Length: 208
Length: 208
Figure (cartoon, rainbow over the protein chains, first blue to last red):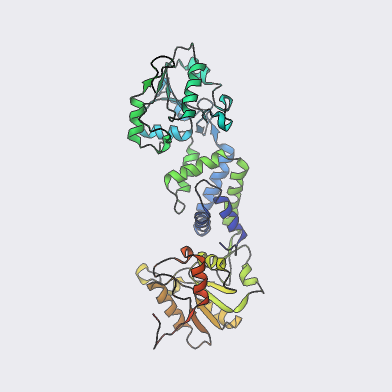
């Protein structure tokens, strides 16, 4: 697009096109939209983005985004503290919540172990996991990790890390197809995969 | 998506999904992206949006967005003042500039006459048009208006409005297919349609 008129507008196009999935044409439409709409709406978005940089927190327990030190799920007394669902990302938490099939707490790893990408266990939010298990009296750990080499490596690593702890480790049922992302799985499949989770066996009789 | 964790984040999802072409999933990806990225980048976007509400101007002559009272095209002495290209929207100016086939000035109508949508001539930026033609000594008016009922009505209205003025009215060649938008026309087609513009005849021998 020819960059004539307002430099301000084209800076906005530039910044919008840095957002995921936004091409130059979409970014231009977005910039023209914010320029044309009621200024109070644009100001609202501006203020909110500014607030995100200063006020958004990460839950000290589970690593979900929160407005306070402890997120609403971790703070909730209505949720089962003895079950902990291990997920890769925040999007996975949101997808599982959408199924309404789970009432325990979460632990967000932030990544999966992937030596080829230089992601070792140190890159994962694992430091506080053992402590959480002990202090909350967790009896079951549900691995809601996408079926993949990295996922399996991560599940294996965590199971070894927790050797000796009196906690049952289960995995979501392998109804989720190999290589796909949790956030794009339909909620029925994802919900069922939590309900029909299977025991995790490291050695003999290991399930695929 | 389950609204757990940060309210701030879901407000951002809400506001992003109000932007054109952005669905809930895209809005969530965008919100998570701005939350996760370097805060200085998010702050930059926030500041720019705020600036847009306070500093963005509309050119007094042509109605293009500008950072000053007069846009860079209207202020440019390198551009031909005697040719005025009439377009519906800012996006049309950007698309025509991209073709590098036009070196005159523009006049942005902001809309096309559409009685069915309640858009009459009063809704268009027409008040200053006759004055601009006189004061700039405009000899040719190029109607770069999308071929459509509304476009034809608008061209007809403007041509009647300027009856008696010594100005040639031409239209971009009808290479642009009926019903399509200028901004999505490839630049070769659009550029040629400006080069091979045809005289506008109101009465006998009127071109389709």
